[in-house]
Image (tube, rainbow, N blue to C red; front, side, top):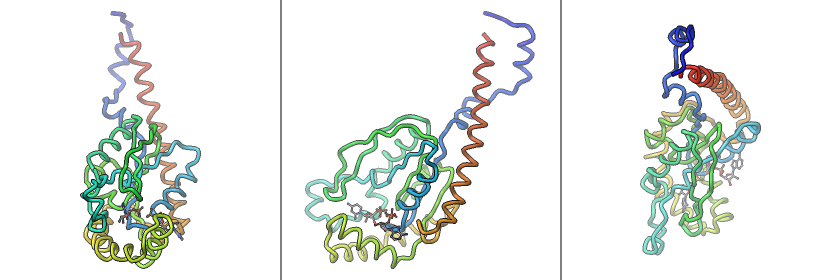
Length: 248
Ligand code: ADP
Ligand code: C5P
């Protein structure tokens, strides 16, 4: 092969990053947003995305990974616990998040709250920032491990219930009696048993959700700082590529 005297020396003196290190530098910044239903998670994500308009940001909803109900299950939908971790296809969520983290495009299901099924897919391209939002986003340790920043939206239970009644009766055309029954039977117990215990994994706890502009500003500033660091680090593996073309 081609050999350059002197270059050999430089090759030895420069510390070369391992593949895993250079991969890490190129990986997108993953933010997890958890909290009770109707706590304002979506509102917080929308505000972060708005402020990061100059970056490539993608939002993934844990809702997209609800198991579709069978015809038999549909006949007794009021008995189904949508707030339990088993209601979600976490293996599929993990697979999607892993691909996005490694810069691959993915197809994500769209869940329909009226039919209780997901069939259509939406194509999601690789991005610099990936936000995963959902009531149980911090439940699975493997999903948590993919996150660079974890935010818990902390809104009082009465505010969450009031918003939920308004949202489910207006947007999901549900009966108020059914909403209240579901809340006391499943939503409240699951919040206490599965959602609240994941608050301890949060790096940041936002009181009052989307109303908390100071918290959103601080979070966006931090993300920008981290993205800047990512960009600097990206230069290093690039330099390595140039070097290796001379090392034939
Ligand atoms: P989540 O994603 O946690 O379920 P959303 O952000 O979708 O919560 O908010 C739930 C409902 O409450 C929505 O109908 C939304 O319009 C409303 N909502 C969210 N934040 C506020 C707020 N700060 N003030 C008033 N209503 C809000
Ligand atoms: O968007 P949000 O985080 O509020 O969505 C989670 C809530 O959606 C859960 O509390 C769950 O009870 C509710 N849900 C529902 N019907 C479905 C699926 C989820 O009411 N088919």
